[in-house]
Image (cartoon, rainbow, N blue to C red; front, side, top):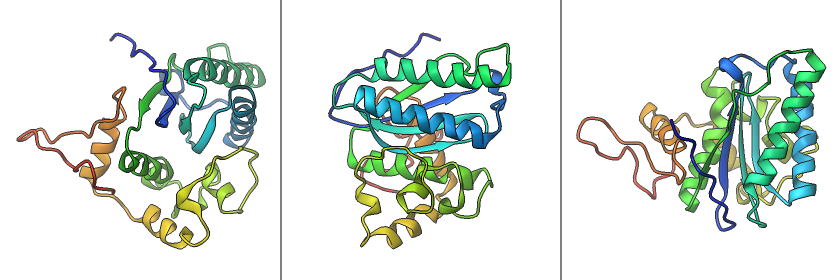
Length: 213
């Protein structure tokens, strides 16, 4: 399969994901791996002016939503992937590289797409039955936003975590999406520009452009 070209732009956020080689687990324990990612996200913000909206670390992959005011997504992510891989590999004595090659980027070109992806990222641990509620999962930037931990990631302003909205935000994030909605978002995040997945029968959209799960 041909590699998707990186589109440099500053208007919309990106969803980015990277997975361990051969879909293996991170060879370093998740707590230590989380610390490496947090430090490198701090460096990404400092060196490349990334605006970090959300980050969740899973057992063998990560989800990241960022904006790039300087239109430098390729440069920023090249360093980020190289440094996290090098540090994790070195600390564990692993022979193979950490990641299974490239990472994947999708542009979220509307507020509704951003909202759906935001929930998709934070709900991932709940979907995988790693926590009961989104605020309970320890390897998530949401806990830092809520003041439940201090991961050191310099998070950008977030309309969903304003004090007057936080209760409603947590209710929304913890509400289980339908399988159709989940599949639709997952399919959409495989494109350069977000595009909802479609039902095979009848080729009808699972969700409208304005619907937020």
